[in-house]
Amino acid sequence: MNVYDTANRLAQEIKQSEEYMNYKMAKQALNLNTDLKEKMVDFDKLRYEVQIEMMQTGKNDEEKYKKMQELYAELIENSEAKSFFEAETKFNVMIADVNKIIGEAIRDVM
Image (cartoon, rainbow, N blue to C red; front, side):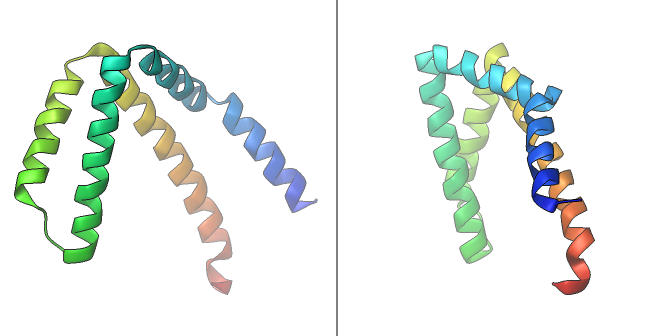
């Protein structure tokens, strides 16, 4: 068995998975709504800043964290945004699970 063939099959199966398809459709729907997309971009930027600060300092900037929570609460009220977050989470869980399986398989040489 060629590991590259297996990796290519895995890539194709991921693209055909329900998680991938739902995430892709939710992302496309989000991109059609420019106001909502702009809010999501702002949220992602803020979420990234909060995560970076937490990794660098071990602390949350309370003001940014509160603003991020408020923006998330506002976004989750929108059905398109809520569907996007749900699809994104399910897709990320699937990818994390695949990475965990691969990581466990090679743990003894890492």
